[in-house]
Image (tube, rainbow, N blue to C red; front, side, top):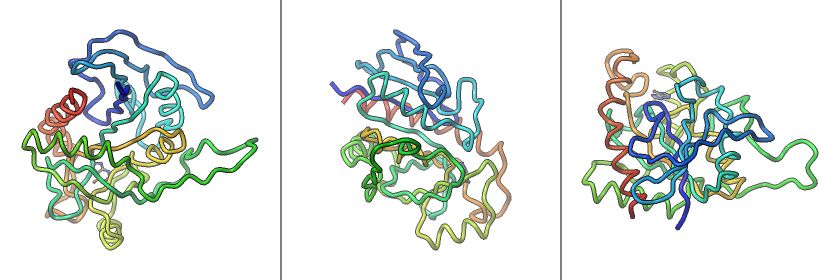
Length: 245
Ligand code: HPA
């Protein structure tokens, strides 16, 4: 059976229901991952769990050691990665609480350690990234969302922004013109690093606020926390359904 790794984002620093067997404080050639990797049984199968921002939440999106995280998961035996992220909604369909399984991503981040191919390497590898998410994994997520009867979008373009600040109204208007549907700060370089390690990767995005300019007011942390609080149970249900399948 495929060993799944779950990367939990904001609001998902622990996987409730995980029967913990081991906690691996792995070090990697790229430094330490955000937290120890929790290994255990979840929904009847072996699962690895990593809190992207640390546990407790310590690393903002631009300071997450994405390379160490993916490397450590691979070392721990991960064969596929399901990533969870909180996002802002750009498209009108992406209201707070909505779930989206993106099919494309545009990378607007900068200055992050974004590749394993650097330094003294004997070959330069240009990975194919035409379709950044693994279609089989995406379909598993979509299947679980359908079985649970949860409203969702089975496609969406994820805009990965640098953060930690939220965007301006003009920036969101530009992302919309670029064809982006949701915006978050953790989608990249995570997806590309997984591809470099040949780890199938897909993500489940929970909309926690209308993006800048998409509502009449400003964006508050309170509304984000409230939406996370209300939505994270659905995320857990979807993950459990995928893993049980
Ligand atoms: N923008 C970027 N990242 C986010 C947002 C947003 O509006 N909401 C949650 N993560």
